[in-house]
Length: 157
Picture 1 (cartoon, rainbow, N blue to C red):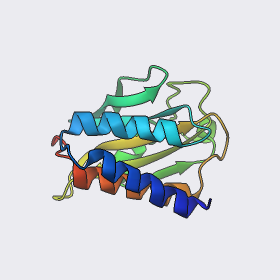
Picture 2 (cartoon, rainbow, N blue to C red):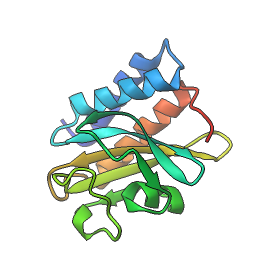
Picture 3 (cartoon, rainbow, N blue to C red):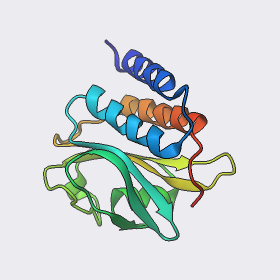
C-alpha cells in the first residue's frame, strides 16, 4: 500500500473513532493509541500541550517521557517557536535535542493550531530508526492533526 493510501485510511479510521466524542483528552488518548498501533517502526506517539512558555506532556503511547519542554527547546519546542512542522532524520544531530528516550533516532512534530491561529501544542512521533519519516509521512500526520482538531474541543493554552 502506498503511504498516501495508508494515511488516507488511517485518517478515515481517526474520523470514525472520534465521530461520537469531542472531549480533547479522550480524543488525544485514542489518537495516540491509533498511531502507535498502526505506524510501523515507531517507539513513541503522543501529544504535548502548550501552557505559557512550556509544553506539558499529554496522552501518549510508549516509554515514559519528558513532562515539560520549554518553547524553543528540542524538536517539539522548535515546532512551537517556529510555527512549523519538524521532520528530523537524526535527532542526535538536531541542535538542542532533548533525549527523553535515548533509543529515539528520528522524529516528526506537527504543531496544533486552533481556528483562531493559536498554538495549542504538538503531535510528536518518534522512531528508533534514522530517517524513518518521509515528506509523505509528514503530510499524512499533518492531515491526521487536522482531523483531530476538527473533531475535538481542545483546550486553549
